[in-house]
Length: 336
Image (cartoon, rainbow, N blue to C red):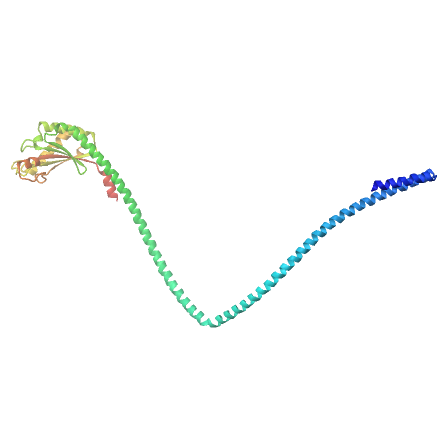
């Protein structure tokens, strides 16, 4: 459009120049005006473009504002509807409140006697509660005492269990020690078994039982040949273990012994035989005399109570009783 206008103006100017004679100054003035018009036209065109752009922005803003106005109208309608609903609910709540207030008023009016009764019952309950609290406090004190007593018993029971375990351990060790001792003695005296010698384990002790025929002549108390060898071998075992206590018991049969001098009866004979064995053991080995003792039992501890020659032969014997030290066990028992 702009190019078309410029061609028209140029054509007019050329026609004017052809048909009339103008001066150069006049031409220059016209040219200057023409240029000014072109500038004014360009400025107007720019202004028009700006106005059109602003018009477009305003149109968009107007559309947005119209949308917001419509939304506000809708929100207003919704709020009006909610307000109406709230007014209805408020009216209903007001009626309910009035009804409740009326009910409370009636209840308050008629509840004075009930309140007084409840107050009296409450006082009674407080008194009962106070008594129960006293009883509870007393029971708690008793419970505390019983708990302390129970704890003391439990501690004592634990200590007893610990001591019992220690005793059991010591007994097991002693049993092992007795078994080992029996094996040693049996091994040392094996060659004499079948010659009137027997080794047994009884009641935590080792019994070495020797018949009369192995040690003594009839009615005598001097140890003879093979018996001496047996005692010599036994002395070697006793010399090696200083923890063994030795008790020698002399036993006779029930046939009365009629003697004279220092040996008058079976009591004397049993004591003399036990003492003779003690002396030989001490002479054969380096044994502490404090570990060894002699005892005469006469005919009063028989192994066979039948009144036969075989029974009497069994009863005529000397028993050497070997006992490991029990000091550790006795200390635990005495301490508890």
